[in-house]
Length: 246
Image: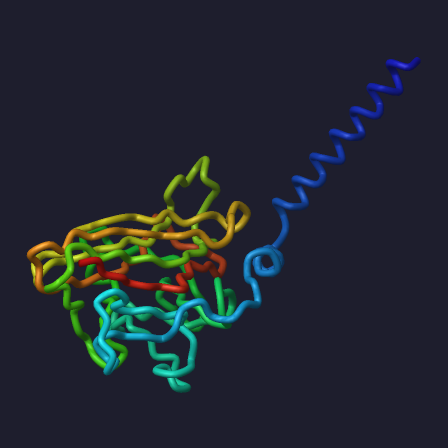
C-alpha cells in the first residue's frame, strides 16, 4: 500500500512538472518579454558618459569613445548615436530594455515599426552593417597613430535566436568587423543571439585590436539571422566604450 501511494505521488509530481513546462512553452512572446524585462532590465543610472575624444576639447588617448545611448548631453533630444545610418542598416535607440540608464541600441534593422529578424546574404554582411564613428557629429575613423592597441567593450542582450540552442546554436548573431587604414573589412567576432526562452540577460562583449604602426581603425556592426521571425525580437547593445593603450 505504501508503494501505491508513493507511486501515485510520484506520478502526480511528474504530471505537475510536465504541465509547468508546457505552460512555459506556450507562454506568448509578449508575456515572456515582460518577464525577461523584469529580470534583466535594471533601473540604474547610465554607466557611460556620452563622450567622443574627437569632439571634445580635452582630447584623450585613453578613452576614444563612450556611450550609454542616452538622449542627454551630446545627444540633445535627438537620440543621436555614433553609428552611421544608411539605407540597409538603421540601428535605433529603444527604451524597451537597457543595461544602464533608460536607453539602449537595437542592432536589428527596424521594419514597419516592429523589430524582426531578417536574412541578408552572407556575402553582403558588411553592406547591411552600420559603421561606428569616432564622432557624434560626422563619419570619422578612430585615430590610433599613437596607440599600440584598442579595446572595444559593450553590453549585449538578445531574444533573437529563431529557435532554442539545441536546434539553432547560432541562429542569429551580431558580427563585428574592423579595418586598418581604410583597408578591406576583416571579420573579428560573431556574438550569437539567444532564444527568448533561454536568454540569460546582459552579457559582456570585449575585443582587443592590434593597432601598432596603424594610423586609423574603423569598426562595423552587422546583424545576421538564419531565418525570419514571426514575432518581434531584440538584439540590444549598451554601455559601449573604446579605449586605447600606448
